[in-house]
Picture 1 (cartoon, helix red, strand yellow):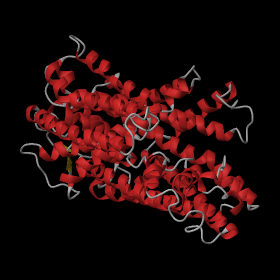
Picture 2 (cartoon, one colour):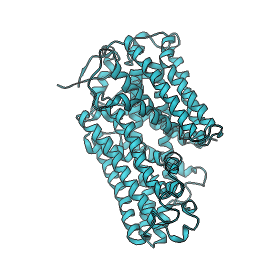
Picture 3 (cartoon, one colour):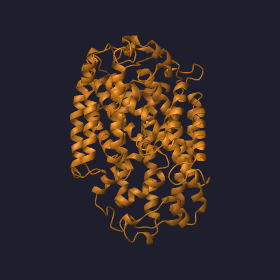
Picture 4 (cartoon, rainbow, N blue to C red):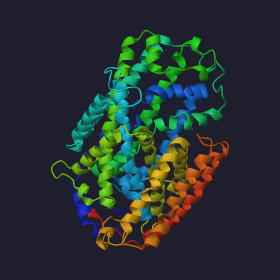
Length: 549
């Protein structure tokens, strides 16, 4: 029987309950199942607008921005791949920060992923808005109507029900949705190019880079390009349900990123070469559509294509929400293993290998997030950004594990000595580029996880055995835990201040590009602080024992 490491640096002997539930997961996912999960999580309805925003910002040079986004996301993905391939575990992205950096960091990251359930609720709300094209009366222009809320709740129940059975069934259905999400953009590209090609677009109207090559970086950050390629980490949370993760996960994650980037490049080319000449009088900045590809299709008398695109505007985010519900369940399952939420939600169904209790509680949370409270939607809309913190925490985790005294093992990814810190910097830029309007709400909410941590550590809250059973090693004093995780608090506070000072919807007191350079400098300093703290944490943690899979 093969053996696998369930915890990295924790006490494997102290977590029999965690091990028992982990063994119930069905290892049925292969390459195509994981690739479909990653691709479907990356590609939502955003592909209908991304080409327009990129062209407005950088003109034809936006093609370089898409390539850059793929490379940056691929760089961050390498550290995730290393962890998923060598330390596979259900909900791994929530577990690895706990093992490497202790309970404070584990709680803050876990809390941020719990908040990111709001991102799935926002996706379901978006589906209702698109569906309003076919069902007038479910959206009043600002919020969902009572009928819209009822339909959104029914969709949430349906998505949960479709995740209720074996993971193999989930993967097969998601693969069908992924095929549709590939076919529609491909048909769109072919139909537009065949009907409205205008030559010379790479050199006319100001040239290839009409706003300078610096605009490529602006499009990468502020034009939404980097966020269009986000979501590639989804297969990592299914690493505990994967056949041969060391071989399958790297190929699936990188293939998902590659397919998405190729699709976005093709769509960008189609947009650049089919926009009518009469709309380019004021250059690419003057091009404006409410629904870019749909309106282009109507201009070219491709009414059938416009109808197909409106249908995809419902199905694409539906596919992303379907994967989101599954991801949320793995996160909640991992949070229960961490002890951040009650262990009751860690239960895995013996017959189907699905954490059904986690699915059920997430359904309740999604329902709450759907409610149209005053200002509620503003908060919900930023929750998806919080999962970006996983990228930074994973970069620290992979460096800590490789530096663990007496625990160094040959890694799957070569060059992690320089990839990890660079990945941490890139992940920090991703968070910073979210903009002050999002981060002013999101980062303080994540820091609210400090209250959860302190509540867990108050006298009598949990006994010593419960503290140790989360896999983070023996119980330590509150002061020691605070010192180990202080880097995360300083990191979040620093990003919040720089976001307010910077040019991404901030006050502009710190001009570009010095704002992004300052973020990079902060990230480098915090990374080495975090790794040193993590290594010290592992020095006092008991070594994990391998568990028969």
